[in-house]
Amino acid sequence: MQYQKIHCDLTGPRASIRLPEPVDGYSIDEDIAAELRDCCSWLSLEDEIRVAVITGNGGVFAVGRKAGPHDATGATALSRLHWMEGMAVASAFAGLPMPTIAVLNGDATGHGLELAMAADLRIAVESSNLGVGSLRDCPFPYDGATQRLPRLVGPGLARDMLFTGRTLSAQEARDAGLVNRVVPEEDLLTATCALVDSIVTAAPIASRYAKEAVAASSDLTMAQGLRLEADLSVILHSTADRAEGLRSFADQRSPRFEGR
Image (cartoon, one colour):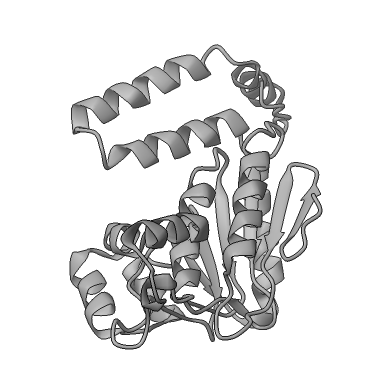
C-alpha cells in the first residue's frame, strides 16, 4: 500500500507499518491518523496476514500529542469531538484481528504511547522512555490512555503517570507490564524477527481466536469467558490446521499451517 506519510509493507504473512519522524514536537497529525486508519482497515480484510508490526523512525517510536481546536476562536464541543475522532488511531490498530507488535525503537510518549498500548505486544530498546505526558504541559489524553494504561500496569501506577507526568524507563516499563521485552538497540532487529517468526509459525486461526478471547475477557464474567474459550476451541477442532497439526505430530515434523 502506498501512502504519503506512513510506510506499509507486506512480506509474505507479515505486515510492517513505519511511522514518519516527528514534526513540530509530535508524531501523529490528522493526515497520519487518516492513513493509519485506512491501512488498518485494509489489513483487517487480508486473511493471509498473520502478524502486523508498527515501528517508528528517526530514533523514536512516536512522541507528543497535538493540541486540538479547543483554544481556537469559535471552537465548540462538537468541533472538538470531530477533531478527536479524526486523530484517533489506537482503536483502529487494536481492532486488527491478527496479533500485533509495537516495536519501540525509541521513546513512546503522549499519543505515541497511546498507539503503542493498542498493540498486543511491545518490544523496546533499552534507551526508550514511556509516558503519557504531564497534564500541566500537554492536552488531556484523547486516544485511550486513561483506559488502556490501567489495564496494563494497574490503576495505581496509571494514576501516578497520569497525574504527575511520570515517565518510565524501558526497564521500569517491563517490570510494570507495559513492555514485554527490552533489548539493546543493536539487537532490536534480531529480537523483533524472532518474535515475529514465533507468531507466524503458529496456527493463525488459533492466534486470532486467542486474541479475541483475551480482548473480550475484561468485559465478560469468568463463566462467560470460559464459555467463549470453549466455543472457540470447538470451532478450531473443525479446521484443516488442526488436522495438519495432528499429522505433523505423528510424522515428527514441523506443521505447515495455512489458516484454514
